Amino acid sequence: MVRAKKESMRRSTRRLIALAASLGGALLVAGTASAAAINDRANPIIPGPSSEATLQQLLDTLGPINAIDDQSNVALWDNNSGVANATLLFEIAGNQNINEFGMYALNGGGNPILAPIFAGHEGGVITRQIKFTTDGVEIDGDEIMGDFADGFGFYLKNTKTDTIFYTEDDKNGGAVQALVYQGDNETEIELPTFAPGTFDDDEWIIAWEDLPMANADNDFQDLIVHLSNIHALEDVPEPTAALLLGIGILGVAGTRRARR
Ligand SMILES: [Ca+2]
Ligand SMILES: [Ca+2]
Image (cartoon, rainbow, N blue to C red; front, top):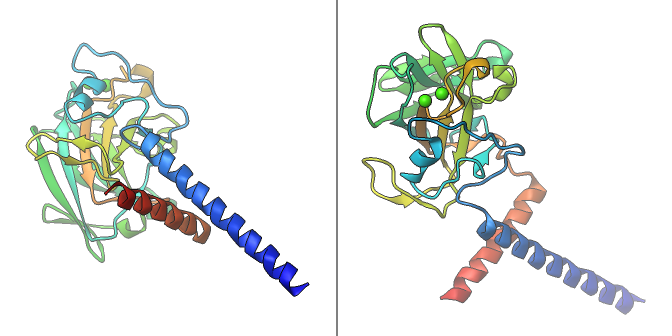
C-alpha cells in the first residue's frame, strides 16, 4: 500500500518533470520562432502608404523589424533602475515643428501629468536621459512632479491645437495613434549615431500618427522614438508564471550548454 503510494507519487513526479520539460521546450520554441520583436497585438494596424519614406522603410534602416507583424500591445511602462533613455529617431510630418513628445503619469484617473521630452522644433537624432526621482521625473534637468513610479505612458501633443494622443488607445477614444515594437533580446539593430547592438526586451520603438483618425494618412512615421531601460507595466509575474518562466530559462540554459 505504502509502496504503491510511493510508486504512484514517483510516477506523478516523473509526469510533472516531463510536463515541465515539454513546457520548457514549448517556451524555447516560442522564443526562437518569434519574429524580430515580440508580436502580441491581436489586430495589427496596417500603416498607410506614403509618398515619403514608409514606416517599414524607416524600420528597415534600423534592423529586421516588421512594421505589421511585430506590433506589441503594451501601452504602459515602468522603470526599476532609476534611469531611462529616449532617442528621437525620425520626424516626417508637416507638423514636425509643433509636435511635442513626452511621457505621462497616470495620476489616479485624473488628467495625466505630462513630462515633455522632445520639443517640436528639435530635429536630428537626440538622446535624453529620463531620471526617476522620489517626486517625479527629471528630463534634461527639468523636474516634473508626478507619480511616474506607478507606471507611465507616452504622448504626442500638437502644441498649436493642444490635441494630445496617448499610447493607451482608450485615451484616444479607442483610436490607435502609436505603434509599439519591443526588442526580443536577439535581433541586431543599429540606431543612427549608435553602434549596432542587440534589440533588448527593455528597449522599445514607438511610431506615431500625428493626426486624428478622421483625417490621418496613417503613415505612423510622423515621429519615431527609441526608448531603453523601461519594462511593460503588466510584466509582474505571478508565482505560477514565474515558475514556468524558471523552467523555460532552465530549458534555454540547458540548450546553450549543449551547443558548446
Ligand atoms: Ca508623415
Ligand atoms: Ca501621418
